[in-house]
Length: 163
Image 1 (spheres, rainbow, N blue to C red):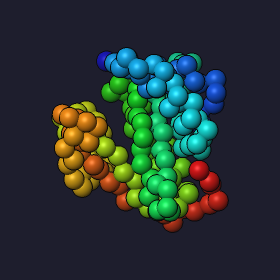
Image 2 (cartoon, helix red, strand yellow):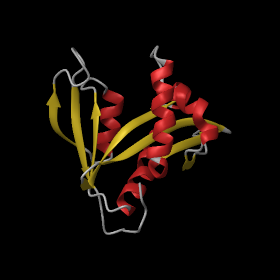
Image 3 (cartoon, rainbow, N blue to C red):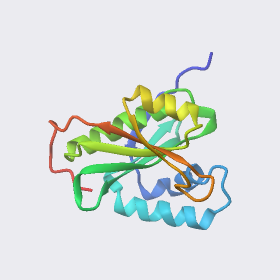
Image 4 (cartoon, helix red, strand yellow):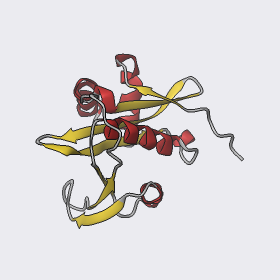
């Protein structure tokens, strides 16, 4: 049995740039575009760009973003965990921390997209009470179907947190 790591969740800093780029580009060959996204997300979504630190290293991250013009909605743009830390509670801990951040900002609905065959992710999201709302064919291009999921949040917690 693998010991569960101690997981520290904290806001992204520029010192996390290289680790976030690795997480963002796992399995992809587009380092420049991924680096641009991480650098810009670090500025645009600083309060909802969260890193998980395990064993002294960034082992996961998530990025949430409000929907422009819709005060009560946000999207999970990214959720990534290093392969050696998957199945150990890192993704769940990141998502729960993101919930607190967006709820505090008055967000009532959190959305995400996931590949319909990604069973580990679907299991996580379902256990976190996300509900499938629709399937969109070719969402990210031909053959890249996605399931859109939504979670209703408890917006009784409000503060002036800004995105």
